Image 1 (cartoon, rainbow, N blue to C red):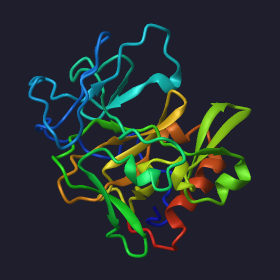
Image 2: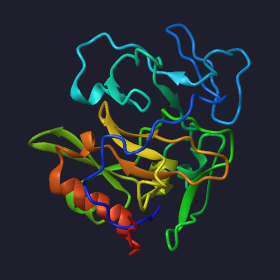
Image 3: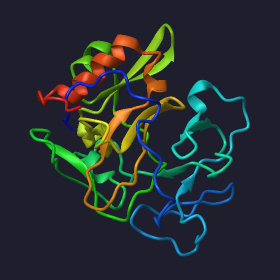
Image 4: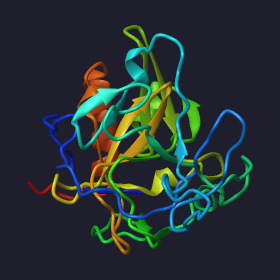
Length: 252
């Protein structure tokens, strides 16, 4: 994963416009009693209404700031579910034990593939080769090693996680055997090509689709301003390192 140039901290909470209504995709619906496993690119005929994506169970406790999700259609935050569009949609990784040599690639959900990026000099990227991924699908969390600040700021595969005003954590996916496929997702060079948003949720980093991602399209990333606002120059440096490690110029 190496991508795009540096980006200015001027993005909205979600820079993408609302997409069309959800097309048919694979989902996994989770209840308190059982989970029906499914994934992108395969339709679960037992769940015609919800399509089978994993839905986040309703939380009982008082939500913290990082417990909020965002509805791309309503352009508003919610905790349990959007009043109009229902619960959030989650796509799980393919389970792979830590320590496997090529673990990161093996964790790809069905329908996604790692191929050579279409961004010049960006190396590998992640592409959708399954069904259309609709707006509002969540991937993650991002996996890697917890490292110190100095190592994170020199990596190009790191994210910073806000804990408090005096405390941050740094997760680095440089080692493929301890990472998941999200390490290969490249940064978008501009808002027009962006289709994923990175944000912090319950102590981890998730990616959310902010535009429909068609078959053959590369998954390209930016971030949610709400996530970055408390992290200041540390976030700026780590994100710019992630996006500019190959020296690509940003387009605007």
